[in-house]
Image (cartoon, rainbow, N blue to C red; front, side, top):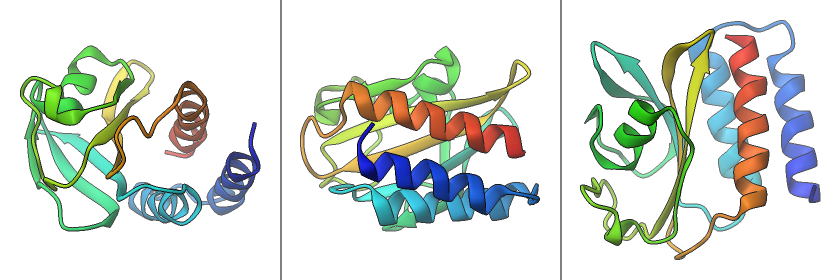
Length: 149
């Protein structure tokens, strides 16, 4: 595990200790990701509400506020409850371009006790930005966060 991820996971555990407010925890988690991960343009959460994904705490440019289930990378990852790592979002069928300069994306579904809470979404202007290590570490990051909610 690289130093950025070690620091990121340790910092997240410290921030979440004795705090269980969903919005506060997601806001700090998004800030941590934006601060520690190099070469990302957006990091944040979409929350599952009323059969769609609704914008939650994030860091970066303004974003789409509603994403239909099954649409775009976020909606597809939510429906499949599967991590999606996309090297070129412009080649992803049905991609929703909140920021047209974004080129790659990773989305981690947030599922607790078989209930979809939402997704963690991270974008980059660089193509093929996200690796298997990113996927593994962000999955750990998400599991730590979910346990606090």
